[in-house]
Length: 67
Image (tube, rainbow, N blue to C red; front, top):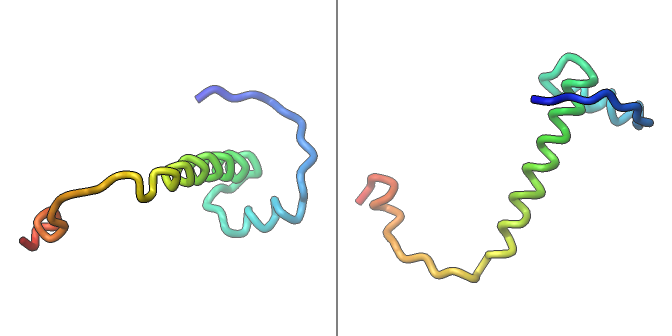
């Protein structure tokens, strides 16, 4: 992983709240995790563009080992 030093003006209250619920122990850890989570959620949201555009054929019970 590459890193870069950056100066940011951050909402201190938001950072403190994030640190309370994050497994990270430093501001850098918390902010990096938040950026990863943000990107992941945005990618997942793009999948909703495909909702209803494909017809799936299969047996869920069989796929789940119940059939």
